[in-house]
Image (cartoon, rainbow, N blue to C red; front, side, top):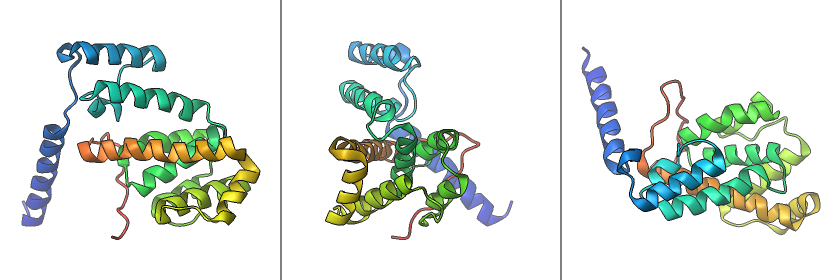
Length: 204
């Protein structure tokens, strides 16, 4: 075996081991009473067992449940609608280079009707050329917010005119919520499925 391949294989194994040591998924039979209740509440709300970013958060079950409840609103009932919500989620995932979040929401965004070339441009860190007017407002708002930590009057007013103040608050909330999930996943080094593709990290 070539030395470079040996090094790459060793690094991969070390990464996987570190991921497991950080915030490993807790087996249901090992749940505390709080974790059992949180898992029951999660399944009642989402109709599926705890998964993805909520698995590392099960080490703090109350936080996990509050996060899930916020997500129930922002994902499914936000004022900007489900299509733009998926678009906003992809922007947050790309900004945090969060592979699992991207893996889950890429096909959902396609199904929602967002064009593949728009999604692929975001994945590459490029401004998409063929966005709709609404996508352009969301992209400019969130990119400015993520990159400068502020939003200019011009950018705010465009979003406010189109979505209203509730829409602006919800849009900001989606970005913050999926940034939270991305941070939890990145801290945990939560793995992506074998058929997933890693995003290229932005230059520092």
